[in-house]
Length: 407
Image (tube, rainbow, N blue to C red; front, top):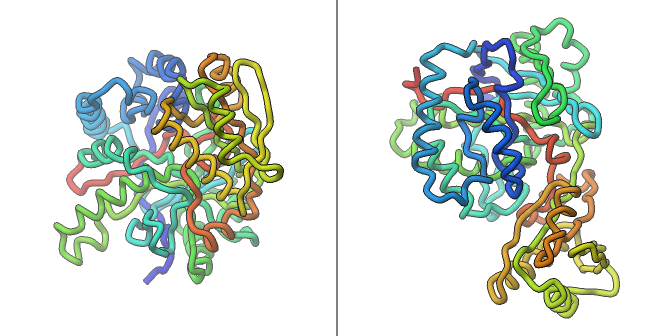
């Protein structure tokens, strides 16, 4: 029996001439830039698109999501009835994506949710990288609970310094079946994908089995909350199943993209903070009094064109983030304001032009410390880092059935 938490799947690929309108960026991007999603929504309105199967978080503030969820589930069933997908049986998809740092290589496959837990008190083979914000789960749970399909924006990482899992596929891609090659919308870069099955998949599985000897096989890089929602749905579902039914039930797995943390296209980018509806001078004065230090991690603070640097102590990168996060949460609760998380520096600068806001530019974490930190210190605080720039985030493309009776 395989010890690996990652395996092949029956992956669905849309049979469309133009995939640019099909593929949209992860729903948790551009949350404070509704105009981005308004453009995407207008562009895809009359198109077959993953936009109609996801709920952008930029729209969550509109209120009740019941109608949106019902529409999403209806679209999924409709796409399946229309037969727009081809099925890649028992396969991986090898992916090359143009990103800011160059080319990021990954492997789309199925992650075993029985080998994953987002509870920081447990020590599973597949671990979360950051704290789970439970308030962010209900909308994602609601969608997945009635969904017949899943679309991955989840990216998971392996510690493969010898480059034994993903990289060998780069050398043989010319003999693999190419599935797609197109430009992603909104400056997302070019993406190419090949089917890896048969002997190619077997070699991947053998390499994964060797990594499975470690206590930590996989750490979640992006999509922690989507995977946590999938885990919660599976835990409820499996209570209704027999042991035999649990073994191969589709809801036991989640489709993800697996990348090597040492891949040149994998970069850890800071997730910046901004707090709205505050008195900037008062907030910064309070911050200096409570968490400011003469030395430590340097944080650049910006408000209405005024910039200053403040030092915050922390034994590690995660410790510094935790200190700042705790301060902002307490300030928000006691004084007021609204905290948001911004991936793009230009977006943060633009948002800080509002006179009642303060932006915090976070430093970059060295990726060589990623696995070491999680293994020794546990999960990072929420929103500690991001893999790549905002436009480098995973776009929805491949799908997988997550119910037995989907048709």
